[in-house]
Image (cartoon, rainbow, N blue to C red; front, side, top):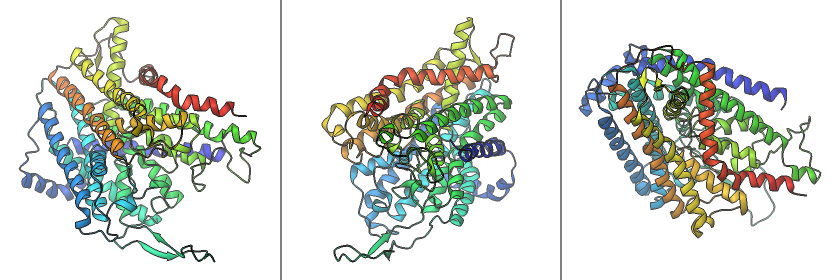
Amino acid sequence: MTTNGLLQIILYFVVLLVLAKPLGVYMAAVYENRPLLLKRILGPLEAGFYRLSGVNPEQEMGWKNYAAALLWFNLFGGLAVFALQMLQAYLPLNPQQMANVTLDSSFNTAISFMTNTNWQGYSGEATMSYLTQMLGLGVQNFLSAATGMAVLVALIRGFQRTHADGIGNFWADLTRGTLYILLPLSFLVAVALVGQGVVQTFKPYHTVPLVEQTSTATETATQTLAVGPAASQIAIKQVGTNGGGFFNANSAHPYENPTPVANFLEMLLLILIPAALCHTFGTMVGDTRQGWAILSTMTLVLVSLLFVTVGYEQNGNPALSALGAQQSISIDQSGGNMEGKETRFGIVNSVIWATATTAASNGSVNSMHDSYTPLGGMIPMWLIQLGEVIFGGVGSGLYGMLIFALIAVFIAGLMIGRTPEYLGKKIEAFEMKMSAIVILIPAFLILAGTALAVMVDVGKSAVANPGAHGFSEILYAFSSAAGNNGSAFGGLSANAPFYNTILGFTMLFGRYGIIIPVLAIAGSFAAKKTVPTTVGTLPTHTPLFVMLLIGTVILVGALTFVPALALGPVVEHLIMNAAP
């Protein structure tokens, strides 16, 4: 790695950590309904929403009512996106006269955006009208992100409260997260992206002459440039860890990511709110050291795996070196494996994005993960398989990490023969059963889905590459769907009835199969008394606990997925290095 590359990595994490604390403190004030300047401006709008909907924001909900409200609201949003796709040919804001989307693709996409996965089996600029992109996909980008943050806040209240029946009001949490956090931040980002050249227009696509005309009569002399209201969707896709691109090439497309400044800003937003929510957590539970411990855990894992990926990509492909290709860094070239990467971003910026987007459950890309070296591509896949808890999605990443914290404390309690406690709450059989469900559901969905796909002809026929890499493409797809990430190894032709259907159900159960147990844990903790700290209580803010938590996360991921990874990326790596 060059000095320049190292400085880029350092700058990225310094800016991230500097911005995380003030944003985290602000979000804690929002969810605790404390006075804020923005509340003075938007407060009447919030109150108007409650009056129109008949909601009393002060009315507490038990965890079952909270979960029911969440599920009904998300179901309605998914049905709205499904209907927009099925009817878009008859609706306005469709200057390119896009046809109605097929039934299976509409089903897959509706679930994808409802669950904050944003898996895209279609090409955005060739499939979706402006109205579908904005009213369907763009709106769900806000609401799915706000849903994840609401679940996290409900869990935090479980730690805060004693002998309480309620964990908050879902409608109030959803409204405040959208109105005071996601909308203002997305507005500022959208304006900044437009300033950098990201397109934002309702005009039809442009037909322009080719820069270099050819003399061959059979070749066309023009090309069509897809445009549209992209900047507003790109802003929330990054702010809300959604990841669904306006264009098929996602953030590798110059209309979504035109400059180094835009690239840095979008990379920063990948994990900004997930990092800031660690401070929100610490502030709300009254011990900021707890937030720092969780943030330290996430950062250490991400930085370590980032350098591993940079190393594999910078070393390049030994098979090409054997043929005499120059892959070392020089004044003339960046060296390493540049296949699938934008030359304007290079290896380091591509790898920062690839690891951050898979750590953060975002899924947007500025390079093609399918073209990474076997082990370089394995790291992003493994970050998803760890449970999307290394930063993870907005809200979902932190509540997933808190489940791992409960497991780590439980393991430590077994070692010393003491009833485990976390933040003053005893961890008993019910919490561990729910935590086990949270850990097992994604693993089951990934491994069972992959096994099914490699056993049936329709699953194997969609693979563009034979052998180990083809297996990796299928494994990555189910990892991405179950982890609600949305990125992919592009060699898998997934826009077909089999994959649209099975991945749709994988995304559905991968999201709500975790949310419901987490809310159950929140309700259980809220009803308990707070146990005073004693000399026998395990401190959960120390470097020792950070190492214990890292070990728990990695051990679960390693034991679960190493056999599957051995059949894909590891075998491919061995074959690549054995090539003459």
